[in-house]
Length: 563
Image (cartoon, rainbow, N blue to C red; front, side, top):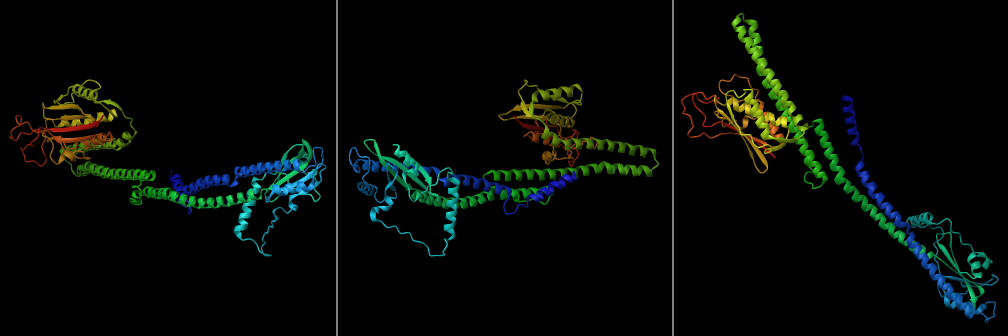
C-alpha cells in the first residue's frame, strides 16, 4: 500500500515537469495547426484553378487555329483544283490574324515541310528586352525561398506522364503527332511539359480547300503566364497562411493558458490538500469564471470545504469521545484503587457495583459511538426509496404498546390512510429517528402522561411532530440538546443511563435526508397549569431553585422532511 502511494506521488511530481508547454497545450496547438495545415495545403495546390486557366488557353488556341487555318485554306490557295498553299499570302494571313500575341504558328505543307513560322516573321516589330543580373550576383533569400517553394509544389503537383516538349532543328510535320493527325484531316490538341514547370499547348488543324487537305497549321502557346499567376497566388496564400499560423499559435497559446494553467494551479492546490499543507486559497482563484474551469474551481472548493468540515467533525468527535470515555474510566480506576486499600466488605461491594455500572456505561457509550461513526458511510451508501411515514409510525406505536415500553405513558396517535404521508428516504434510519424521539418523550413524561404524535402534510414537505407533558426544555437547551454527548435528563434518573448521542444522531439522519429537526416548548395551558407547590414533576432544570417549575406544557420536537 505504501509502495502504491509512493508511486502515485512520484507520478504526480513527474507530471509537473512538462517544460514550457503542458500536454494539453501541445494538443491544442497540434489540433489547430494540423487543421490549418490541411486547409492551407489543399489551397496551395490550386489544381482546379490552374486546370481552368489551362482549359481556357486550349479553347482560345483551338479557336484561333481554326480561324487562321480556315483563312489560309480559302485565301492562300491557287483555286479549286490546287494541291498546295501559296506561301506569301499564307504568311500575310498569319501575320495579320496572329498579331502580337504569345502564340506561335507554324505552317507545314502536305509533304510535311515547314512553310512558315511566326517566330521569324517579325510580327508587330516588337523587341523584347529581358534584363539580366550582374555577373556573380545571387538572388536574395526571399527569391530563393519562393523559387524553392514553387519548384517543390510543381514537383508535387506535376503529372509525370506528361511528355516533354522537344523541337528539332530541321523540324517537319512528322515530328509532331498532332500534325500527323491533322494531315489525316483530324484536329488534335496535345499538352507537353517545357521542363521548367510550364506547359506547352499544341493545336494542329488541317488547312483545307473543299475538304482537300493542303497542309497543316500548328499553333503552340506556353503557359508561362498561367505559371506566373499561380506563383503569385501561391505567394499571396503563403503569406496569408503564415500570418494565420502565427495568429493561430498565439490564440492557441492563449486558449491553452486559460485552460491548462488554471487546471495546473487547481491540481497543485488539490495536491496541497492531499499533503495537508494548510488550507489553500488558490481554489477560489477561478470561482468567478462562468465556464467549465469556474465550475471545476467551485466544485473543488466545495469539495475541499466539505473535506475540512468532515476532518474538523472527526477531530471534534474524537475529542468528545475521549472526554466521555475518560469519565467512567477515571471512576473505575478510583474504585479499583480504593478496593485495593480497603478491607471493608460493604465498601468493596459498593465499589464493585460502581465498577459494574461504569462498565455498562462504557458498553452503551461504545455502542452508540460505533453507531454514530458508521452513520455517515451508511447514509452515503444507502439507497433512497419511498417510505410511508404514517404506516411506519403506526407500526412503531403498536410495537411500543404491545411490548409495554411506554412505561405507563399513553401514546396518542391516529393512524392515517395508507400512502398519505410518503417521503424518499432510508426506512431503517428514519425509523431510528422516530424511536429516539419517542423514547425521549416517554422518558420525560410523568406517570400517566400522554405523548402525542401527529403528521401534517404541506405543499413540499411532511411534518412529524411529537409532544410530551413533561416540564419542557431549558431555554438555552433548545439547540444544545442536538450536540453530541449533551444530556438534559429528568430529575431522579440514574447518571450515565444515556450517552447523549441519540438526538445528535437523529439530527444527522434528518439533515442527510434534506430535512430539519426543531425542538421547542409547548405553551402551558392556563386552565391546566399546576400550582407551584414544590412537587417534583419528573423533569427539572438543573440550576432551578427547588420546587420551581418551568412555565411550559412539555417539549415538542418537529421533524420536517421533503416529499
